[in-house]
Structure formats: structure tokens, C-alpha cells
Length: 502
Image 1 (cartoon, rainbow, N blue to C red):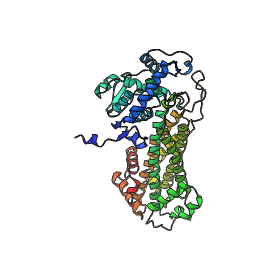
Image 2 (image 1 turned 180 degrees about the vertical axis):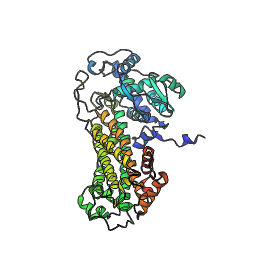
Image 3 (image 1 turned 60 degrees about the horizontal axis):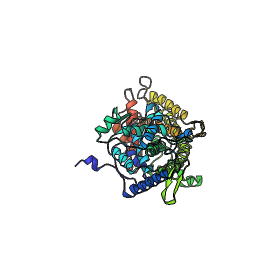
Image 4 (image 1 turned 135 degrees about the horizontal axis):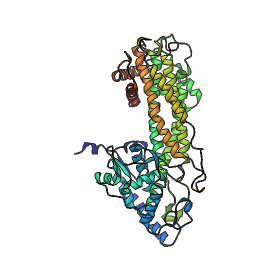
């Protein structure tokens, strides 16, 4: 028995997706196309065929696309599919990560499985079969404005499933036709409606936003734990986490974070040598991280709605004899949420950088050596890491400029206002890696502080976290390049389940 297959994530397209499904889609997953989904898509497809036979106007099936909607489309279905994907084969730039592309396919499968798009059931089967392998279409990053769905990127996905373009298999890039063969997949047959339904949705935007949310949440949890370790190592008084204090603040996120910090700081014995009031980077962590907690809840609500919804045009309602043309492909909710997520990411990065700056400053760190150097002057400790963290924060701040209102008219003004949700979501996903490096830089600084004279933690949770860091990263003594150490420290704290801490 293949134990790897036995442990694979199972996703039922009859049920709403969750973020962990998208994370799992980076590798092979088992996607179930249930009978009800097959029946819904089959009924919608039959209704569509009848409507076309009755000479009812259906965008993309009987008409041209976008600004050319006033012209007749190609009468042959496969010819119309060829035309759909050919004119959208215009993507440029670096390619998207394979895991993101596969998560995008899963999101698209769930949308189509709801039976409002009019695709043939065989399309669902093909997407499920692809996700059971390591096949990943090669998709250029640039080309979508997130307004009529992620047309250009999703066209690259659909083309690869037909055997055109390129795909990755087990990390190896090859012609898509060869990749299909290597994975035991057959080229996907599409007509015009199938092709348009595959591309006419916000699935890339949604997938990128969901994965970014997952990453920022992990970093947020890590920063809660690191803030507690910093408080303990410096011997601070933890009254800033007082339950009555935060209750009067009246923001639910601050109460949640404060309660978590109080749990982690159980057993803390203040040194009695610190000033009455700590700098804001310590004293205001429940308020800052609490506000981030509340913002992440909003982003989660948007992601949940996007994962549950149908992003396509037109939508078919066979029971009501309706074909409705509208704008469910318009990614404004995700654009707003992604911009908010970028702001949260930047402020979390600010906090990590400021806490590291405090930690390396002998004026504020309780007398530890400058830059946490084991032999100041002869050694320079965390000086390079602190400098690099400043550059990382600058990166996050630059990318926090909102994209959701940077509208540009396009497509002969049929798309005269656009949300740029794709840009916002991809940028928020980029920020996760930068934030993780800041988390790792702070974690490395805390590990080094303990080596150069920091007091032993008094709270069991702090002791456990410091022990994990010390086991994974040796002291900076003497100096050495620290790029990998930053990543190692980040991995330790980002993969530690908060509930595993005492």
C-alpha cells in the first residue's frame, strides 16, 4: 500500500473549500466529484444546449468576447474554444509558483462544480485527475487585471490541460503534452463554453489571497510567541497584558492576543530593573497584534465567501429558465482584503524590526553588548542581520501601496473600472516570504541574546521556545554568514504550534 496516497488530503467538491485544502493542493490530493455535482453540471449543460438551439443569446457561446460581444462567435464549439484560449495567450513575466497554480485549479473546480457555469461534467473529472498528480501548468504572472476574472493566467492553465504550452512535473519543466503523458493524463476536450468558464473567474486571485492569509496568520502567531520571549528575556513586567486593562480597550482582538500572551507568560518573574513603562514595541503588542488579529478575521470572511461562491459569467439557472449576464467575476472584495493584508503584513514587519532594534541596543536591552556581539569590535554579532531587516521592512512598506483603487480602463472601455485584485493578492503573497525573514531575524536575535548574557527565561513557555531555537541554531560566536540561520530560526518558530507550548 502507498502510505503517501493514504495520507493525501481528500476534497469533496460538494463542500466549501478551506484554506488548508489549498495548501495541500501543492502536492497530489484526492478530489471527489460527487454525484450531485455531476448532476448539477449535467443539468446546466443540457439547459445551455437547449437555450442555444432556441437561438437565445449567450455570451461567449453565441457571441464574441469582451469588446467584441456585438459580433457572432464561431459556430463550431471546439473552434470557439481554440479562439478563446488563443487570443488570451498573452501572459508575460516570471512564472507563478506551482503550488499556487494547483491551488488555483482547485478553486476553479469548486466554482464550476456548483453547476451554474454550463461546463460538461468531464471538465470536473479532468481537473480532479490533474490534482491527483504532480502536474502543474506553467503560468506567467502578468496579464490579469482581476476584473473579468483572471483571464490570461487561467487561459495558460486551460491550454496546458489541452497539451499546449508548458507544465511542471515533479519540479521538471517540459512541454505540456509530454507532462500530460508523464502523469497518465489525457488532453482535455473543450468547447467554447467550457473554455470560457475555465478562464472567466477570480480563482487565481482567491487562491493567492487564501495562501497569503495562511502565511500571515502563521507569522502573527510566531510574533505573539516571540514578543513573550522578548518580554521574559529582558525581565519586563507583563502588566501590559492585564485582563482588565485590555477589557477596557474594548477591541476583541486585543483581548484574544492578551489572553494568549498571559498564558505564555505564566510563571514570569520580572527582574525589577526595568523602567516603569516599556517602549511601545513591547507595551503595545496586545493592541498592535490584536488589531492585526481583527483584520485577519475580516480577510478570512472574504476568503470564505470567495471559496464558496461562483465567479463566472453568465450564470445558468435551469430551474428558473434563466441565463443571467452580470459581473460575478469582479474581484473587488479580494482586492480590498488583499490590500488590508498587505498593510497588516507591513505593520507586523515593523514590529519585528523594532523589537530586534531594541534587542541589539545596549541602551534599551538591559546592558547586553551592542549588536549582541560576543566580542564587540572583534565581532559584530547581529549587525548585518539588523541592517538587512531594515531593508526587508522597506520592501514591505513599498508593497503596501493599495492596488484596489488603481483602476485603469481597458478592453475598449467594456472594462472601464477594474479592481486589480490579482495584483493585490499576488503582492500580499509575496509579502509572506519577507515577513517570515523578519520573524526569523528576531528569533535569531533572541537566541543570540541568551548567549551573550541575557537572563534565563522564567516562564516555561519561554524556556521551551528558546530551547527549540538553541537546538536548531548555534550561537554567533565567532561571526559567520547568517542567511541560513535566519531561515532556520524562522522555520522553528513558524512551525511550532502555539498549543504545543506549555
